[in-house]
Amino acid sequence: MVKAIRVYRTGGPEVLKYEEAELAGPARGEIRIKHEAIGVNYIDTYFRSGLYPAPMPYTLGNEAAGVVTAVGKGVTGFKVGDRAAYVAGLRSYAEEANVPAEVAVKLPKGISSETAAAMMLKGMTAEYLLRRTYKVREGDTVLVHAAAGGVGLILCQWAKALGATVIGTAGSPEKAALAKKNGARHTILYRDEDFVKRVAEITKGKKCQVVYDGVGKATFPGSLDCLAPLGMFVNFGNASGPVDAFSLLMLSQRGSLFATRPTLNTFMAQPGGTASMARQLFRVVENGSVKIRVTQRFPLRDAAAAHRALEGRETTGSIVLVP
Image (cartoon, rainbow, N blue to C red; front, side, top):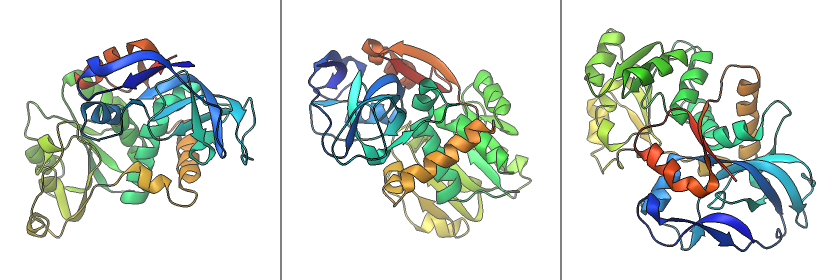
């Protein structure tokens, strides 16, 4: 038995139940990891609220890091005692979890379990956005919404390291200052300013090659109006609600734009995808191009409080749960 956060019905943070749950030994192809830190992500709130449906009951959470305590049959890449991290389907809000070995990666010596838990999902999301969905190049101008959030801070730092000019939107002067400190050359207070107008002013009418939008409904279709001809709108989250169906004519009318809604799971499922993305992420973290900020830590039993902080826009950087 292990302590875990279980979900029996959809709703607010109050539906998260801290209780004992059964955990069998690892099946063939799996490893068992004793968690030292667990990542908290906005996608967790989508499952909890029912926006992303899942069979119930389940253990919430998609990423964690710790130490391998058991290895299932057929696993050759891990041994007991290895430090490992993963992004996987619902299971991580628990003291321990069984994880398919193919979605886990060994941690380099220079990366702690806390850093890994804070960055695997968000960092690999940034990797596929910057290097696979739209390949950011030197000289590009990039708009990052929610630039002071967990993914946003990584996007700003990494895009700057790639030679891009980063414009970041934020909800307060404090968050704007944080985004600037982490790579955004320009910031826009989206509650006080028209971000479309400001992007046009900042770029002298040239606009952006790509918009990375994890906010969704509240920033659409304004995000399209920030793009140069042939630019790409990348919607990867729904913090304000999902983008409703829209006419494809909106893309042609604004200069033959591209629009996409990618997911991390699709890129991880490609042959070698998980290992490749993790390598790129570890490289930029170890060389200092990207710094991972863990700003809040909650005991596992207080996962509901972590969700309230996240949804209340009270957070910057990354939140972790500690078993």
